[in-house]
Length: 85
Length: 396
Image 1: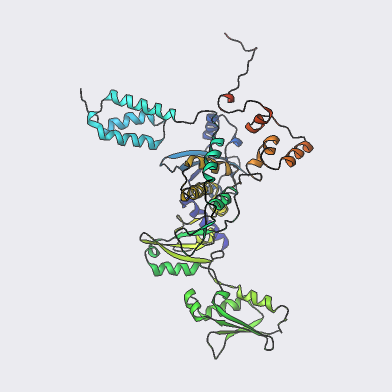
Image 2: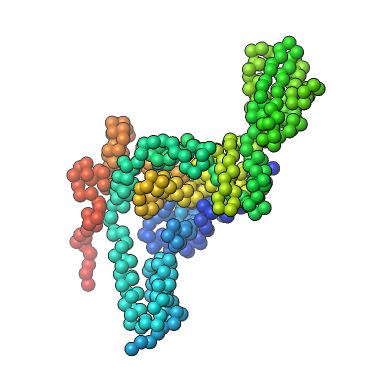
């Protein structure tokens, strides 16, 4: 019963209004991001591999996750987080 | 020479020239304003407008090297001195105390595990949303009810080896429990006793132990019985039904997101709590960041202080940078600075310096605090630019 509950909640959290859209970016896109800012991956903000959202989208340590945040003044802003163990 | 432009032409031109440079919402706003003057607009005007919008936007960007952290610290610090020190305030709900003002702000930036007044707002789904009775049904289901809540009196009969619980009929009705449920729950939790209703009084439950009760442990046994959970969700101590517009919202004292989201009839998209650490655990770091911004902005706004949200966003970004919510202060952001001098200039100076000496700490004097201490130019504004002369470079 516990495991069943875990799986249903993990789908529900992605729908919650506080959770912005997360997605794992491809290697090519990740390199482009790093080149654009001129930084190493660990200079990005981090997200833990055991973060519930990272788990739900299947992000592994070393991936770069793209987060599309809604800003309070109505726009969208794209930020990246580096998955750390 | 008036030549009106169509909305499509304006949209196409503006999008082509601006959409890669300035945010979406600004572009949309510009188009909607321009659409009002379509008949007077010429292509030359449009070009001028677009150009000046772009210039204006770039003018208002933060300059490279601007010490945004210091500006943020001052922009939040100064208004905070104006905050009232009064701890409690009744915000909206008469029955509940909510910590607000300076104590709440300190709680937020210190990333406390549990807020001093945890609250959960439970929004309901369609069939339960507009019906007070159905909302009450869910409220009863989630409110934690222990045996102690429905018992009016407990007697320990050491001679007869029994514990007699006198149930309160009013409380039973209020909590929506009947005597049979109480007995069943007790039967599950207590194995070494017979449990039955007193024949003479239907609201008296007799727990008849087979072995004699040790008088020294009687207190303990009693407490265990009273703490037995009848129903509800752990952590939700009190539920109040509140009307908001035309829907009913359950305000719960305490929080337990993970289990509440799984309850049928609860809108799992909108449920809200003020427990940042719990949101981090259940909904992830990005949700914690959003909530942190909202909570800090709420505290400041409630006190009538105007702080730009971007300052608060910077604070929240720093607190959530490492993937978990870290406090501001020596166990969090300030304590994770690389430079020993910068750490020493914040708190516990002697300990930091002694530690650095013992471990052979190195200070590169790259940051602001260190530079100020040794009398260098702080790397802020124009001083952030470094020029290096390379005499070996070949120029063709």
